[in-house]
Amino acid sequence: MEELFEDIEKLVRTEKRVAMATLVATRGTSPKREGAKMWVGEEGRILGSVTIGGCVDARVIAESEKVLSSLESRLVEMRLAAEDAWEIGFSCAGDLDVLIEPIDLTGFDLYQSVRKAIDGGRSAVIATSLKNSFDKLLIIEGGEVSGTLGTPELDREAQTTASELMRKRRSATVLLANESLPVFFEVHGPPPTLIVFGAGHVAMPLISLAHDLGLKTVVVDGRPRFATRERFPDVDELLIGIPSEIAASLSYTSSTFVVLTAHDYKYDLPVLKVVLPAKPAYVGLLGSKRRGKAIREFLKDGGMDEALLEQLHVPTGLDIGADTAPEIALSILAEAVAIKSGKSGGRT
Amino acid sequence: MPALYSDVLLDHFRHPRNYGSLVAPDVSYEKFNPLCGDRIRIELKLNETTITEARFKGDACAISTAAASLLTELITGTQIEAVAALSGDQLIAALESNIQPARVQCALLALEALRAGIEKRFKDS
Image (cartoon, rainbow over all chains, first blue to last red; front, side, top):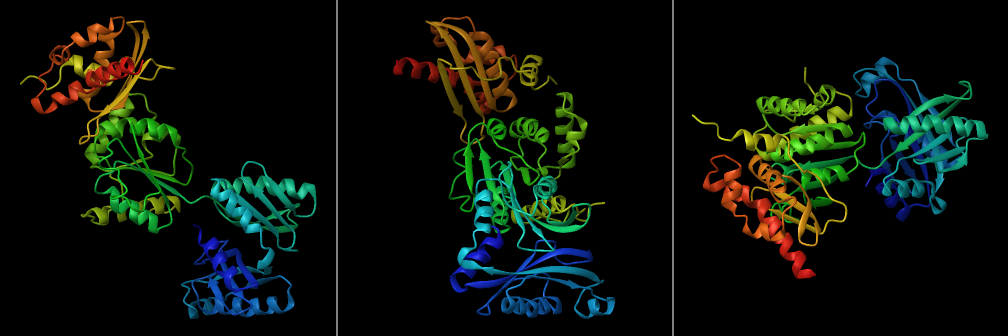
């Protein structure tokens, strides 16, 4: 479950009103991305963070207490001079905008709608006017819309922007209405999914670690003796059957990671024929470079496009000297996270 | 040194015949090897006792896949009784390869699925 919903559940039990601080814009270096939240309760409870701590969070807490007193939202702009940044532990300066809103938790159903969408496998975007934070538009993937930013034209413009940001899975502040109105788009999506083909010994720590990282996990194998709950206590779904047939029945998005750990061509080849054209975020194959070359050549001879073959990561995982199954699992997930974040992960 | 697999076996592995599924098959049976994970499903369309169409689907090794492909060719258009008469040795011989004892079960997986499927069909009806 997304950390946000866990925080809300905790707050609802102890608080009636909270200040919700949301990082809505960053310029320069920032340890957290837009959308990061901190909650400050009327009863003093603090959850989350808009940075990694330090003076910025302290200032947000102080501003949140003012918001709770006045019950009026405020946009706090923090212009950090280089020396301030050094002092609070940043390696370089970054400017932050934090929107702080008073929230009455007794009628707080906006995020319930978001959660319902996510539980149903759909993304949701909350668009909030930074000039008047009471103007909000909720856009659910598939076309469902509620609330308003003020005018139908503005709502239509916001829906177009929301669709683009949903695809990128990135929250951001965007200027609408001929660049006159800053609107923060808070993007929420279903958790990333890890699909592992092959229920062998590497798959076991891979699933456990992925579970700890908050990923939804699926294990596919043709052998009921291997794909068991006992071996995979944390897995969300265990699917047994013809692996390539199961692969064809699954859906792949820009937040789906696929790892083939069977180390057996009879699974690898037919599954890759299905998975690579579906363009998930990551496809990794357990095996050596030599094995990877042979697999690529076989698929190429079968007519697979070279651009698709380039998406295959083999050997899968970052080169961290992994030897044991848990170490290999760590290297695979490290590479998958790096790819998702658009980082090299140290690869040259 | 002779090649491990014959051209016949490699051709059926690389270009399997009758690969896929049938709409509303009269016989459908899936069999797997619990250790290596070979998994083959055989489907048939029957006209009374004649096998009019045969398909197979599965992720399996070269021997299993080639044997399943070859088998579907051998049985299409034949009478069901002919399946009972088809021996494992005949199927292995048709692969024209030196199948080692440890791999015989791979070569026979599809045939076992076929026989079990037919038996189930006539037991149920």
